[in-house]
Image 1 (cartoon, helix red, strand yellow):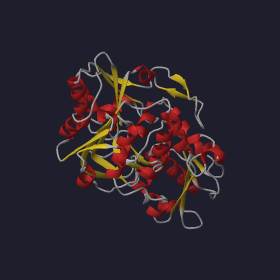
Image 2 (cartoon, helix red, strand yellow; image 1 turned 135 degrees about the vertical axis):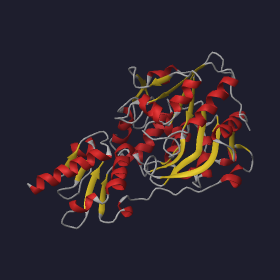
Image 3 (cartoon, one colour; image 1 turned 30 degrees about the horizontal axis):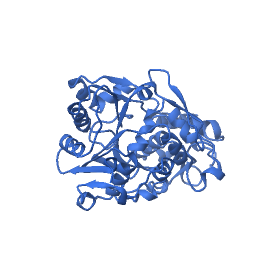
Image 4 (cartoon, one colour; image 1 turned 135 degrees about the horizontal axis):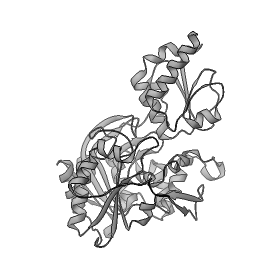
Length: 392
């Protein structure tokens, strides 16, 4: 097997030690004079250990290892979900402190105007607005968290690269008009991610499985202490090994399979030089998959979802988690509380709460909650205002 087919798994140590050990087993090119971007998963305001954002000690391990291999021009950047400020997110996640101690510049990837990059063989995309600092980097390290995802089954190294798209460009991948002749049984988002990978892939992937997330990932699920780190040069094989450790068949992850096909690569474990060879049997720890419907988790709640993005869906999940008692007073005539989100959402009763700009724009007869996405507390504010209006 080729050196780029090596995927290394380390477990049983601390986050930093697992990272350093895992990286030490793979062949990394000469990094001298290369401008290197570390792209963590830090697009939301969560503290370390919640399974939402990359563990700061994994980031520390990546930085120290790159420097040991000759890397000097290292910076760390993120483009968070709309409404989140990059540098604030990096502070609360603990990543900023790790970088300060190592004199690593922090970059708001949304600060500079984007580079409009043609997607020459795209099936749904013709171009992408990629953050300028990403395009200017010589070597990109994707450092995601090991998570399940409500739309894409998992969120790993390849999905993490979606955070290199500037601002609303990330949302656009959820809003593309569906074309049956192109998509077939696949979601538009899966096709769009595969289009994205033709112009945007990491050179090194380090998957943080210190504390992952299962169920309603990428931000509303349950944290899953795991204690592993997975590293590899080939992003498809690295994601495939990570998914397998999560108990998920990589060949049943559409965006991963479609992306690998575009690059004439594979997600078959037979093509992996796995170190250690028994890593799967040693550390496999199945993750709970996202349920097919949100409504089944909450009694007397009906969620109408049509191609929503993970940002709005996460806001709805957080709202229902935090304020499910409050919705009892806002049930409709069928005895249920109705909430709708996503583009072209329809067939919901009058009085349904429409969450997010897409639902507000395309829906009618509902109660609008504007935002891209609105936060959970704002959803509650609109609901309370609706209650006041009804009483008057």
